Length: 308
Image 1 (cartoon, rainbow, N blue to C red):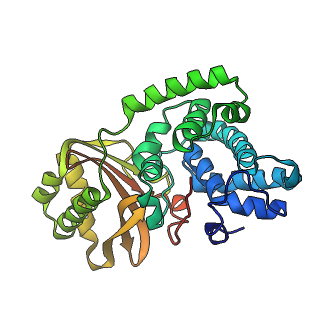
Image 2 (cartoon, one colour):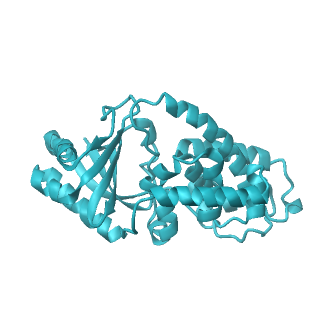
Image 3 (tube, rainbow, N blue to C red):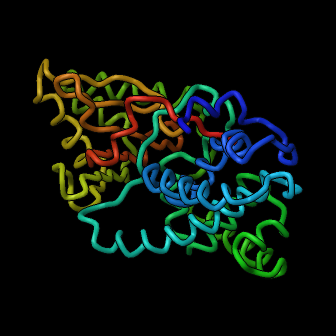
């Protein structure tokens, strides 16, 4: 049940009926993974949720299910909600800032602007501020366009309650989400300037790219060295970033598509050491997100298919 097997079938209509539970599951696997990932911010946990979804789906006769897509999304949502509550407890003891697990994404993810925005590092961090139920409702309604009655079944609430939760979550996200739409081209240009400045040790070049109130978050998970608290301010962040040049020829910065947006991969001796994502406002970098926790870099050697 690997990622590649699902790419060609991911766009089947929701009500189509496959000949076996396996065929139906594979037809929607990329969609189900995306739902779970957006709810959890963790690819490893999303994969576990899909395994649990499969175990429950395997006992169902798909010919008796009117809308297989909706049925599978409902199972996935319920399993993801259970895991999301467990994750909240784990994050309380997490060492340093927690960042979502980065995914190397295919170019077609970036072409779906709404999907790319919803899985961006910046948006996933906003979703972290919602309660588990609010997050599930927001993701299902605002990202995947699931009908209120289907969401109500998935989260165990009335339709009236789901509508109220949707309004509350939408307002919460709107107040915290990054301001303004930023194109991939703008992000790519800024990161290229960032890369050149780091490689040449150009501190002023970094200061020109960074917003005065830029925030740097580093996730080492207590395993890899990382700033234990957010680093705030252009001068402090520029000094931190300029330090990457000390690794010399053994190090490299290369562009990549991560979570639907341009990003940088910092390699040491050819091995991915850090994934660096950025958010821009008014042409300057306002957020830098550096994931160093090795457990979160295990999927960066292959593209992950995401679907709506």
